[in-house]
Image 1 (cartoon, one colour):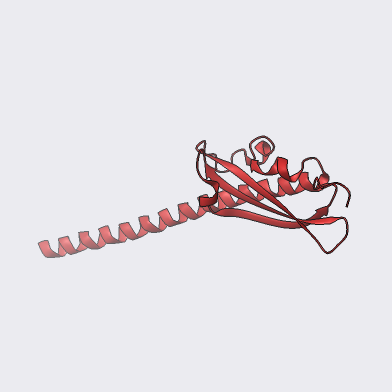
Image 2 (tube, helix red, strand yellow):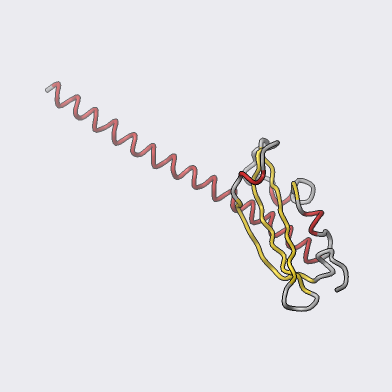
Length: 136
């Protein structure tokens, strides 16, 4: 009788641990999805600013705290990390257009940006003048 009680208790504990493990896994996936959603918002904002000519690639590369505040409010609000944007321009086969690549990372304050994974990447053709390159 005591053995039955111990076995039942052990099965209950093992089942509880399995459920808690799955809940933890799900909570981590939700946090990852929120961060990727925030990164995509920052990348879209950067691409829009670049395409419209409001900001150039050099101005957009680096911490996005000055120009991406409305996008990132409430999404993965971690005061110990900031959105960092990396913008690269490449010549394209079409005249007066450049291929812009925007990468966004969530970097701990004072941390190394290259050590953190890229959460969002956008590639798009933008007008050469809007990209800050001047007339061809």
